[in-house]
Image (cartoon, rainbow over all chains, first blue to last red; front, top):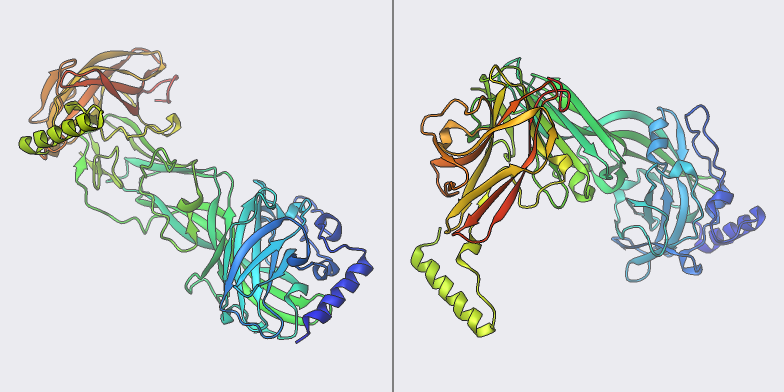
Length: 396
Length: 191
């Protein structure tokens, strides 16, 4: 393995040649290219800029992240920690299979004897391909001791600084996270490119259901989410049929909403996370030698769907009397002041955790339409329909 | 519901404690409230209110229902039911009453006509002056019925309701029912 001092000298030399300072200034150091015809061109990264990343302990820049690392060993060159920005939600959504992008290096550091690290970076304005429309920046943090790697992903909104750092992270060493790894590189000089292999992999969370007794009473649902939703990241899984192995999360999305059309079918309404399957290949930015390849699933965006097969029946305890012709709408919000869900069932699903980060403005509404008077009633599983957890239609 | 002896023992201890600490102990009625399954303790923002938009039949009138019950040892008396707000102008109030009904017959959400077709066991009371059933009653429940009539093509109705009440003749209190009771039309939703 290359000694860190050697890499450090190379990095300094390249930085000097490139005219870079030890303080990263992405807008200058990185060759972000503009998109064409609405489809952004993947950002290319100047390899010299990667090598120029200074160790956080040597710079008086703002702190962007605190963290801890466990399970790593010092094989003679410390445990390196490395943070880079992921392309934004919009950039990822514009990619098609075969497209390639790069992660944007932000900062690096080393884990101290107590297993802690602090990353610092003087970040100017990030290239637009790395900043979501709501201002979120998704950052992947990697620790590497030469044998084992740990990785976690986190999101932040707004500029990264001492005042607004990323949430603290905990990195855990995992031998399985690197499928092929060379022991001859320094993490600080990695140049990684990521290729989208496929997309349209969907993870579902049921957000409600509607059951009607015949083909005349119809039902529909709307979902509005104006806050971010935290979605898990799957690392090193070979296909999406195996268990979802979460490693941190990225924030999606700002202002997702969906309206399902009215239907007499029994339906389960689904909030879906579309995942992309990526291949990440990393090289030593200085020597150009191959380092490792890794496969992962990452969230691209939220979407909505429904299933007619998974709506399950349930018993009821309280019903209405026969209803007038018309439409009943029950709304619910997870606002702190009002917690009265309409069959919300999201938090337990791997990969999607709406409840933890949707603070205020996520709501849904369930609607039942009676086409004639005195023929239908509504029933709840644990109370009257106005406050029941699950609601279904019946013949009166 | 606590047994009377236990309750008075508790009230006496609170009075003694109040005297000792120089504070006034809680009134008997403080432990009693009017509760509605249609009204969360913290009312939601108006965007999240539930609603029923009725398409009235030949009588042009619809009865909207809001379940209510008494929680606690005091006697609740409903003194007034009025709209929190209104939407549209082509509607008129036909009547308001409190109905005690058998739970197995179902609660009124929105039913044709005012009064609606009676369920077996229904007992109607006038408002003001009516007393809802206890929330602990397993057989019987109470609901405030609000009858509205559509008077023109615009439709309209109540944007929520305020139910005012007293406990043991105390000062007036109220709960807000975040439920829009509307007749269809150009001023609400298309029929």
